[in-house]
Image (cartoon, rainbow, N blue to C red; front, top):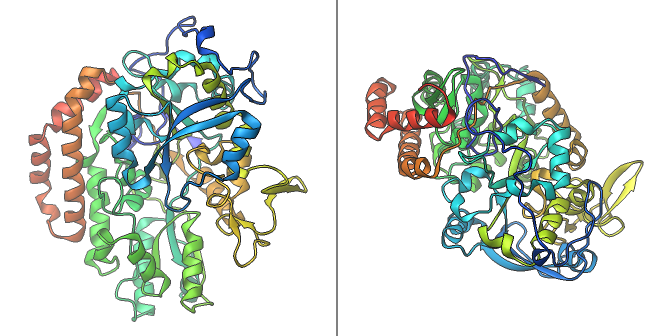
Length: 555
């Protein structure tokens, strides 16, 4: 992959945005050697005497860890799961579950951290999720000496700078990120490939070309009210077009959608407010043009995912946002609707005015990670807990177990490749699964974001459950795209976090509301200056100045 770190006219998310990587210039620096905390015998119950890279973990006596568990509706928790049984039998580990439904997880996790009632281990967590409640979390960077597998991958994959960019003003880190050996771009646009081929069209190379092709498809299929519909509007503070705006934003030199993060973008010299950048305006202008020209379904900015999928799978739309998992849903839906001739393909994300760019979130090497309650360091099993965390989330053996399960029970190795046993499936990857297979996550508990971070971390594990077309997509994205410079870290002090929290929320809400209005045409883009003035009235200039001050650059 080509990565450029010099100043360019393109956008980047800051290091407090979800899943973000960064560099070490500016902000807090890592503590000097010798600053690590020591763990005494009173906190070493169940800990292995020797612990290093490649060691297999098993507590020396049964231990029970408190776990703040994100219960996903697609694979609701079962206490008889294989992964639960093997934890107890093979690792001597059981859990005191603090189960929270996915829909409430973000809010309740914050509340539990604030009140000091969160579990020992808090997985499925990004730094941005908890940046305003770190006073209730353990500074896990004090204990890196007890995490040899984590540190081995950080060093081996050259992630030291990205990790240090996440430190706060005290030099502390409060979340262990899920690590990726290679960037794992996933979101893009799915098209009706059969209709594209019938029209003599190749996959679009630019967003302008995509618009031109939508017009061709609409003319060729007059039954379509709109050739393009959208989804992913009802998550993350109800951001409209959250997925497609993020995947397109790097190409316009800004940050948007799920990648909006803390709302500032590095311009090569300082941070700017993303929602008022020229590239942000160009991005909204482009999608407004699609709506205005009758190419993008205006309901696509507000409809839920089921409505969007129904339109695509019943032939009412020719394009929709997608990823490596939902494309299977699209294909199955079309087949169930009786359209057995339909072909669906995920395209490589088109380029834009800023070039062929992935935003730093998409092109980063960090994913959802794990945090720890502040008082866990006083627990008698603390050392054993760190060894367990280091094993399951960061060792090769633990990562394989959490994703694939147990060889001979859920998978086998054939010609050097893992494959699920007959009768077991995950996302349609097993041709021998049968008509009513058991599912690796729902029926066994594996490949569950609570225990499996970053889809396996290593390139081998990440790609092991991907279809060849997905591997080709990721390879093409990494080879063809550059990654926007994320800028230096923004290590806010506790006082700065308190100062900016409400302003950040108000600014984000205003931007998301205006984004929908501008794109749908409910508000004219000629009103841009008034929109900027409204953000200034909400404290935008002061907010950006604080972010630049924390980053150690002139604002």
